[in-house]
Image 1 (spheres, rainbow, N blue to C red):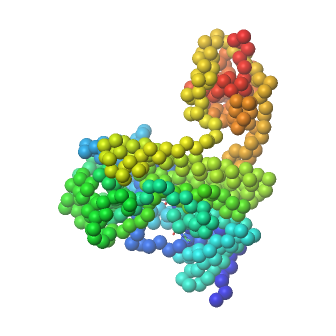
Image 2 (tube, rainbow, N blue to C red):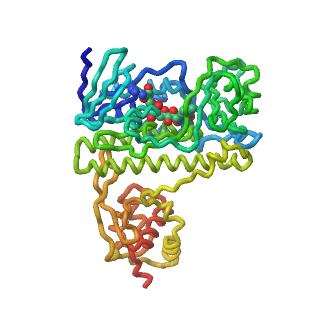
Image 3 (cartoon, helix red, strand yellow):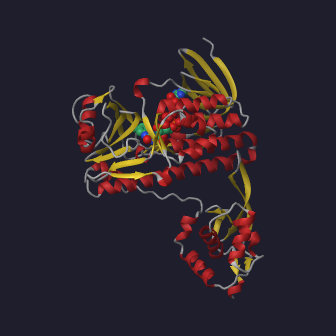
Amino acid sequence: MNPIVHECEVAVIGGGPAGAAVARLLSLWGRDVVLVTAPSDPARNLAVSLPPSVAKLLAEIGLLDAVDAAGFIRSTGNTVWWGDKEPRSRAFAGGTAGYQVRHRDFDRVLLSGAEAAGAKVIRDATVREADVEREPARLTGDVDGVPFEVNAAMVLDASGRQGVVAKDRGLRVEADARTIALVGTWHSDGGWEVPDDSHTLVESFTDGWAWSVPVEPGLRYFTCMLDPRVSDPASGDLGERYVASLKRAACFGRLLHGATMDSDPWGCDASGYHAKSVAGDRFLLVGDAASSIDPLSSFGVKKALGSAWLAAIVSNTVLSDAALAEAARSIFEGHERQVYEAFRRQAAGFFDQVAADEEHAFWTGRAQRHEEFPGEPDIARFRDDPSVLAAFEALKASPSIRLVVTPQTEVIQSAVIGDRKIVLEDHLVTPSVPEGLRFLRGVDVRRVVDLAGEHDQVPDLFESYNQTCPPVPLPDFLGALSVLLAKDVLRNDAMC
Ligand SMILES: Cc1cc2nc3c(=O)[nH]c(=O)nc-3n(C[C@H](O)[C@H](O)[C@H](O)COP(=O)(O)OP(=O)(O)OC[C@H]3O[C@@H](n4cnc5c(N)ncnc54)[C@H](O)[C@@H]3O)c2cc1C
């Protein structure tokens, strides 16, 4: 049978949060996009918690109103029994609210948003092969046995854990700790005895942890996370193992007393991994196709949306400006790796807390997995730098300023993330900061340097900066100024 052939600029594999978001953004920006997504198994639906901060990304993608209108439960915080028999409830900062969503329903809202923006969505279609070496790149697969082919200048692999492009190219690096999730839904006519029924509940136990997300009044998902290599392999089938694990979570066990299981439990892999490389000449790995973080963070979807937003900017650049393609890919590589390492460190910190009391290999294997990744300069790195602290103290002690740009300061053009594209912007370089400085905590240091010579008092310089740039708080401004002095971009001649 001859395949149905589609030609486009960008082919997206996968209609999860990452695929739908990147397809929508690129379509809104006038790109010709085809998104191919496989059928989902209705018996393996998952409920996930989304933090309040996901709203900013949803707004960026233009789908906040659609998600708000979908009627998901709004969560006000979390209740945890984490290494402790007493529950700790914590509300989200500032009275904000997250979302408790069934994955499939959330994906449907986002996918409709991609279609509404003009992306061609091919549903129930499985990509069997992705050839990203040839030009144009080619996806081949089938919809209900009917073959199709998509030819595209770029392929965005957003196929999640499947990693269609990543796996074929041997790009996947599995993490050292393995996690399986056993998932079930429970119904309780009388509701649940918890401080706040909108909350995500989390409980650690001897050889794993359990987690519960509400999706309807009286209906909750209860999921157990175990390590197949070291967690108690309770005998029996998956259902028996699931119930046995939940019993080890004593507080959840009490909650479930009198509740009924609503459907057959099922299991899936939830181990972390990252790809060695997430960008090639004609492909990007987006969302979980690039890396997967521990579900404990509840940030997987937010990470996928952030990855999609940057992938849209990077693809838009690659397709329109060959001179910036390499820089764009390198920004994507750096960003994806940094985000992954940051979440990995955060999760290791949480596992550390339980490992202090639980000697089990599940916990000790997950704690202490910190791995430093050399990132771009940021104010956090400079905060503990003695030369920056000394510059800050000297600035405070100086009754006036006479700031001059040092002769070793050079201005070079480096790639940064702009609106819809990677662009070149001025950076300040000295021997102490060869990687260059542009923004520190939102302070545009190039602009500070331009204004520096015009004022003899720091408050006047700060005032002048805030009148001509998006305002920043005084502590951030003083921090940035101290870095400029410590790293020999500026010199204060008033102190001579
Ligand atoms: C047990 C568990 C609990 C989690 N809890 C949370 C949570 O509370 N909060 C949170 O934010 N995140 C959570 N996550 C993580 C979250 O689900 C993922 O990070 C997120 O879904 C990633 O989005 P994605 O679009 O990259 O990939 P996915 O959501 O996996 O989407 C991939 C898409 O690609 C399609 N696809 C796959 N193969 C093919 C193919 N060959 N051809 C065509 N299409 C294909 C799939 O059908 C799917 O539509 C959890 C994950 C697990 C495993």
